[in-house]
Image (cartoon, rainbow, N blue to C red; front, side, top):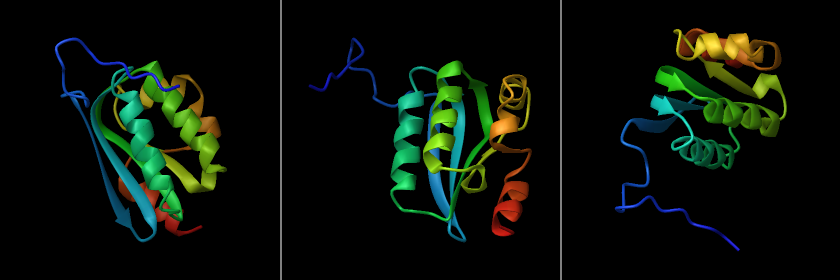
Length: 129
């Protein structure tokens, strides 16, 4: 049984202050996220990661450099994505700035997954593997 939760007033399914786009750079899928990653938008990020993974890329980068709020729901999505990708060599997160880099570092996520300050750094590191 599948439950569908609809917000009152038929609000748009994807939050206005959240966007995710996908591009392929040399076998690496880059998901560029902007806006707020919270309980409302985290399912959309999960969907984007799942559809990107279905293409069996060599690696995946989630670029949070344009995210201005990263809530615990968003962090949970990143942890799950890292675990599902099966190894830190295949999954990287770009986080720069207090809204993203700080919470991820405080939680010790830099210990379990590859965190980068820029997309260029992530891509050059992944292409070297």
